[in-house]
Amino acid sequence: MKALITGITGFAGSHLAEYLLAQQPEVEIVGIRRWRSPMENITHIVDRLKLVETDLKDYNSVYRMLEQVQPDYIFHLAAQSFVPTSWNAPASTLEINVIGQTHLFEAVRALSLDPVIQIACSSEQYGLVQADETPIKETNPLRPLSTYAVSKIAQDYLGYQYFQSYGLKVVRTRGFNHTGPRRGEVFVASNFAKQLVRIEAGLAEPVIRVGNLEAVRDFTDVRDMVRAYWLAVTRGKPGEAYNIASGHGVTIQELLDRLIALIDVEVTVEQDPERMRPSDVEILIGDSSKFRGDTGWEPQIPFDQTLADIVEYWRERIKSSRD
Image 1 (spheres, rainbow, N blue to C red):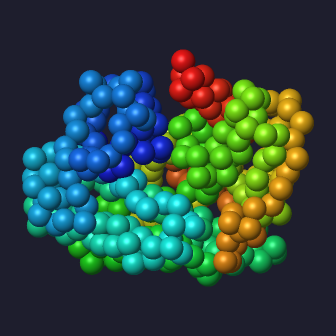
Image 2 (cartoon, rainbow, N blue to C red):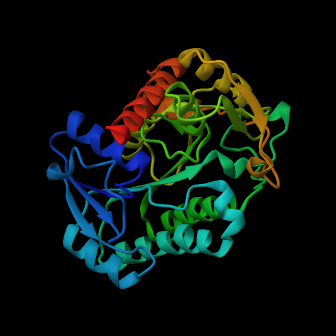
């Protein structure tokens, strides 16, 4: 049995590879990477993986890779995944996310392959959510507020269309916010934790710079999220869209307060205009009862444990950079 992970060198991809190695040892793991992909997230497991150099923006590259790999499962995680970047580079975001996935689907068709394909969509698709629409079900209207969200809607609907038109066994997971160790420092929990750990280490003044603290988000630990991805391809129903979420919302202010309590430093909080978005999704709390009912998934890692693990990750990173 063979699993292909696009985006294996990234945050969720590296955690998914770890999960499969530990919990599904019968699965051979193949990941794709570009020649310039950073490797630090998988250095500790790279000798247990097979990596194939592939560019999702190049159809011939994707075709050759799939012809070689012949996967039973495809976890399509590779994406331009940072919302603010999509405002600065909207065309590039659409090309990477939408055209890249189209190349993947078309190559699967051309080779007459029959894998189960999980595509990592996003709660950002729901966009402008009214307070009386939470917790958000899969049937909620999609009102995107960023090019990133538009790209994820396109990926989502392409998955549905290719299932209906060509019988591709696509499962669409709409993951709400997920975080944990190795999360990129541009993302909120990881960014705050890094700032605070640098203050704790005496490397920065005791000022933490923030954006909108009023937004409400539903956070799941990445290790629970990747377990959900496996259940999506083994127990989920092809053609379906599934929310994956904890069902509990916290404000970004509360997230910051919990991190400050973990590190026990006194800081001044300053709003940074550069961190404010042209339009922000105010509230995202997900109803994942459909996914739980079909797969039996439940989140297992408490949010405070997730935050503690992020703090320890940054302590180790900063310590190693000083040694």
